[in-house]
Image (cartoon, rainbow, N blue to C red):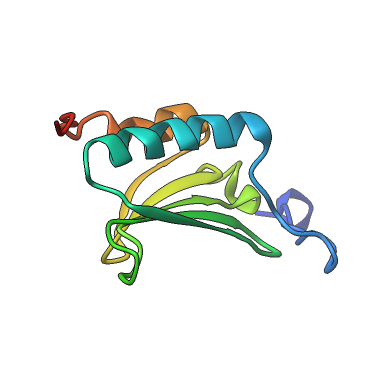
Length: 114
């Protein structure tokens, strides 16, 4: 492979941070709402960093996150910009589109608690 064919990933400028856009947040909050209704989530946190954005979902307030939805634009062409990470750090699903990546939550059973 020649040096001309190598694509270099340039990080964003130091002052910019990666964030979820409004349509992405709508999809994520829809999933979070279903988890809350099912009693599987009680809290969330959003982190914006230089290289990625993270939406962490907590089962209990003091615990480590049960799931993390991560957006890493630098990986968009290679592995996909979106990933769902489990509580033990395992990658549950990775994809180029957020809606298809969030489908990992569709396989979980949600029951409304009365």
